[in-house]
Length: 148
Image 1 (cartoon, one colour):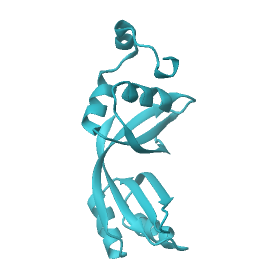
Image 2: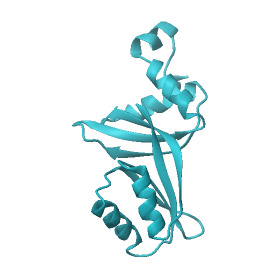
Image 3: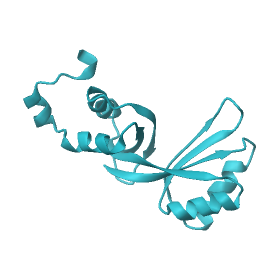
């Protein structure tokens, strides 16, 4: 797992807007590692993406009239299987780390997925996940959160 920069932009919600952005990113050879687009209550959309070149992505968005911001998020490679994300989230919840939003993308590694987590404290979340191992949890006598 690692801390990565995520680009967020507010977009006008109309046909072709996302296609134009993705085409421009592709033309500039900016790889998307993860992407999320959600409609908001005011009709605009929120685009979030993790890209191979954050500055190029921002430059492209600005050129297309979309202002953007950058935030640090946690990118966690997980097994692509039932319950894998729940296990990660339970570890963080047990340490009182709140996940403000999350999205998942397929990973280049076979059988893996890439979870993007925006937490109240991403550096602490990273430390918790790095330090947690099945042996350490057993020694600490912790039960899974769902069984408490």
